[in-house]
Image (cartoon, rainbow, N blue to C red; front, side):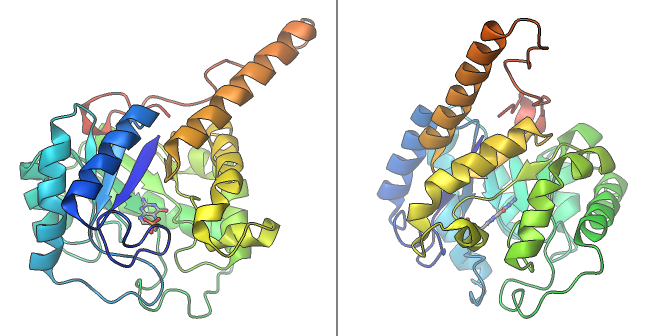
Length: 290
Ligand code: PMM
């Protein structure tokens, strides 16, 4: 389970809340205590309409937080599209780069990842953050996203990134209508089988959840998030990226408990594996699991 820590004044889901470095550190420690396997530190909002953040400013936001959190022993990923910011964060103790452009925004990015022997998350995004929600259209969203992710895995391998350092992500809400996002989420097993890398899914607090009655306020979408995260982990996702780590952990535990109880009550039925279908992920140098 990857916990989100946005050190930005304007992220859609938690913008401004962890903007001061001391607040960012407190929240990072909270995520670890809640059971995060990875903390994802981001210094540039990717919400639709967001303006790009200059490199120096992004570095100033994330590097001190990464350096302080690296001592906690939980792997840190840096959510950036800029190779120089990734390089600085990796030097400060991060071990994973989470690039929503899948290495396309900055031609140096995959080389930096390879040089550090870091992990990388390669995400699908149609367009760029500023314009991505302008009437996205697909012939077959699942096939197109699957093909894209497979091609980006090849590009990362060609740049020298080790196969066991690569994770892919369909990019829920990035250049997708709510229907596209639901289709991709439903296709988690298809994508997990199609793309030769573990799958990360990021449904947390996103607006596609409004289609099932989640509120306009992103912070009120944690219950719907937990259901989608648990479902994704049950159907082939290796990791989920969430804001409410404690709530998702509890939802996972509840699922394990109730399914365990159900299988004990009906011993003639095949029992599901208690740990779900989560494969091990070695990005960041240790098993990521859920
Ligand atoms: N979503 C956001 C930012 N970074 N990275 C990955 N790999 N996957 C995502 O779905 C993703 C991401 C936007 O959400 P935020 O403002 O809550 O960080």
